[in-house]
Image 1 (cartoon, rainbow over the protein chains, first blue to last red):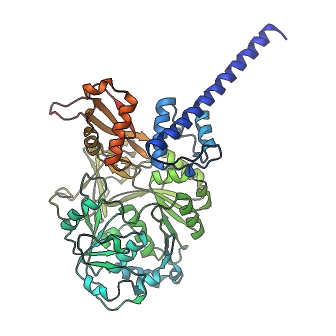
Image 2 (cartoon, rainbow over the protein chains, first blue to last red):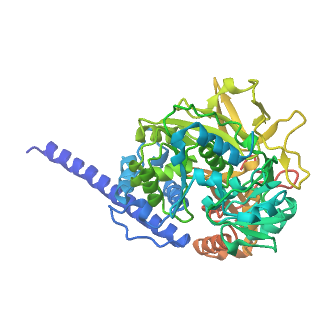
Image 3 (tube, chains in turn green, yellow):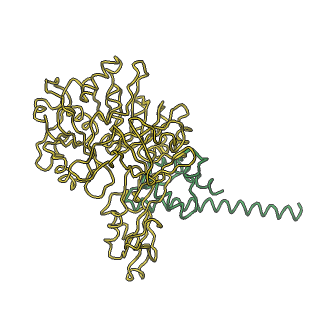
Amino acid sequence: MTQTSIARDDATLDTARNVLSGASLIREAIEHQFEAVARAQDKRLAPLSDDLILLESGLDSLCFAIIVAELEDRLNLDPFSAAEDVYFPVTFGEFIDFYQRAAV
Amino acid sequence: MGCLRQAVAHALARDARATSARLMGATGGLALVDLVARTGLGEARAGLAGRSVLIRTRSQMGAAQALVELDGLAARLVLCPPDVAAEHLPAVIERAQVDALVTDDEALACHGLPTYVLAAPSEPVTEVAETRTSEWLMFTSGTTGVPKLVIHTLAGLTGAIAPRAPDAEPVVWGTFYDIRRYGGLQILLRALTGGSSLVLSEAGEPTAAFLARLAAAGVTHQTGTPSHWRWALMNPELALIQPRYVRLSGEIADQAVLDSLKAFFPQAAIGHAYASTEAGVGFEVNDGREGFPASLIGVDGPVRMKIEDGSLRIRSSRAASGYAGAEAALADGDGFIDTGDMVEQRGDRCFFTGRRGGVINVGGLKVHPEEVEAALNRHPMVRMALVKARRNPLTGALVAAEVVRTDAALAMDEAELKSSILALCRETLAPHKAPAVLKFVDSLAVTAGGKLDRQHA
């Protein structure tokens, strides 16, 4: 293996690490927003797991609207307004994926 | 046309299949044939003749029954939506000169009004003349304080409903709206005068459960605001229903929600309609694109539209005739009603851009910035506040606030102060009116006239 290919592999790995940490930052930000909005709106939030159906999370449509607005401010991402994506997320995992894909 | 009971009877007589049509709630149903032929008020009906009747019910079903019982019999049907604050009722009663109450729950009796409690329609209707042209009073949403009462008649309310062809496929309507608001009432009247079934939601019913009921009933025509639909699109149970017709109204239908619905229901016709409580049904758009064709402007017909000072004006035989108990004129000298909806023409298409006066439409519920500002200003640490709409992909808009703190507040922790201000707002305002986002600013622009500068906000 030559020096250059090792260097390239390191760079690839770095990019992958950045993407991964970006992805986990997005997940953290989303989890934080769900909890903060539930607290502020006085809603009982179901435990957040990837297969949680969003509409069974205990939050109402106003809560989701606020979460989306807060995430737009914090992450500079608004995948709901991206016209090419016509499918709305149904589970919490899909919601996170929706944002992670928008970030790439 | 005759009264509502006669219109339903007519629909049932025209199509033998309509005899199985019913209004369907979560806990029970009501067959249209029973609505027509029977009464749940018994002998008491005679006492309601010529009265101005407040219809204040627990369920949508009760309200629908009351409308059939009272149209043509009472002088006025004052249809109270479920979310009207009790403190506004005395003013409503005075303005509409209400002198009787019809309800499905005795606990809703109020202000010493003679109260008539609806039972299930069981007794055959005895001869009480239903020959009056009753006034239907609808509440407008979004006004600060007491809602305005808009005067309609059944003929105007049903003016936009095309008669159904006798051999047309049977229809099962469903609506995310409440039938005590204009958008929902349109769907109730379509079902009743078309001899079709209608699935009604129950207060507090989870969306998933309602969708499952819609599916079980075989809904073919489902209606709601764009916000209702965005919310439904996040629900796995939406896949259970297969409507032939999907209708949106009550808010701006943007291209994203139209495309999402087309992708989700590829077989369905998707239309968006424009209506307002005051001006009635304006038009329907069925080409799958947001906005509406500019060619609709200026056309002569039962509905004539023009754009003046940027807002849509409508002159229509389906419009309300005025406000009850108020001096304010509904229409201008030429009979045009200013809808307050701002329109911009680009090429051959017109697009809605928002509301005049900055009224914020949060998922179909209107919010006056001034009311929210007043709530914010009550906080001792708030010097002044400006409230405006913030675009939102789920509810169309959200309430956003900019707040200037008092000097004393500058030393306080920002996050704590923010929660304390928002907590006060949530105590005094409905959830959709409380600011969803709040930020602190150093100053707010004020016009030469000393008012908050909303234009440049």
